[in-house]
Structure formats: structure tokens, C-alpha cells
Image 1: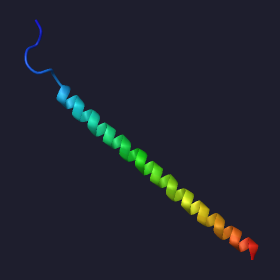
Image 2: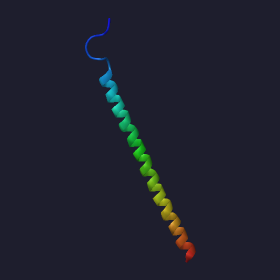
Image 3: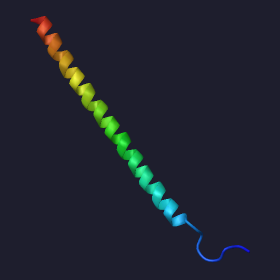
Image 4: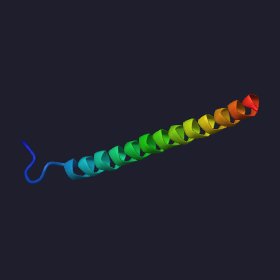
Length: 55
């Protein structure tokens, strides 16, 4: 016989998926920001090196 009432565990699965997606997006965003900061820092260092060599 089939189970009657609500489907088992669907609410929990949806909640888990939502939380995992939120976590993945957060990590992805942090990685992107970290790379942008690193690029900016490298650009600044290279600019100061070029300025020192030109003098």
C-alpha cells in the first residue's frame, strides 16, 4: 500500500538544497573578491616597480 499524507522528507531536502546553494554562492563570491584584491595588489606592486625603474 502507498503511504498516505505528506511526502516524506521533501521539505527537509528543499531546505538543505537552499542552504547548500547559499554556502556555495558565498564561497564563490569570497573567491572572486580574493582574486580581485590580489590582482589590485599585484597591479600596485608592478606600478611601483615600474616607477622605480623609470627614475
